[in-house]
Image (spheres, rainbow, N blue to C red):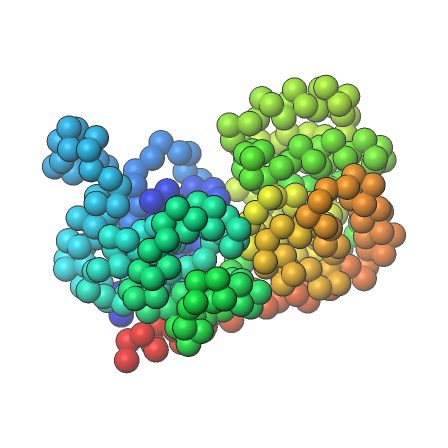
Length: 353
């Protein structure tokens, strides 16, 4: 059965959460899955070939029409043709907003959750009261990242729980086999977008941890702002902007504790990558699946930020490092690609009947 995964800005050759999800799908299913996305000028770090890019300036549509037609209409136009040409039977959608037009296409449709309920409520459902009904009518299965997300969305959207599944993100990063040694290097891997990621919280809190360093890997529009913040807080010897990287495993192996301070996430694939390399996690409880991520493999902080609590969490993990690191590896096992692939295969088989 051939599958098409569509996302407007999720080219699997680029860095990012949805992009990594797409890339993992490809690694699991190979040529059985195609990817459709809008062409962008983002830097590509990988080399997946089965990508169809919609270029509004080169697909036979005038620039005038490009200005007046929405991306959802473009999506509908191209996907409809691709469904026929490639004999696509299952369409994976990665944003609730895409259901409005694409939900009417004649194929089985899976919607995958990538954000917290709070984020979706603010960006999708708050100003579109009919959207929940469209999802209930046109989606064959809504895939959630944890049971906590499933419970929240089912309640808020009045979904049929029998048309939902919990399938965690998978991770291709090799599971740590040896005992991980500790050091005083903290690490963040994230897009430099402070509105969502709130890296400023961790940066400022490093004043409470003078014996530790923080390495931040990522690129984004707020890079210069972070440089100024580090300078302003006189943390040039403790906090380092390292740039974007596709050498995630190697960078994680150089550090000891993974930090995530986001205002919202779906799951945060980098959390999984960190666990599988034995890194305990300090995480803000700002999204449903945070409760699924932390199980004696780190410390879950309150949503309301407190620098002292953050520093205490880092020191507690450092002082009990073997306990937290061992548990991180154990929890990381559940994200093995073989396990997640079998769950996706089961879902696709169900929809095929």
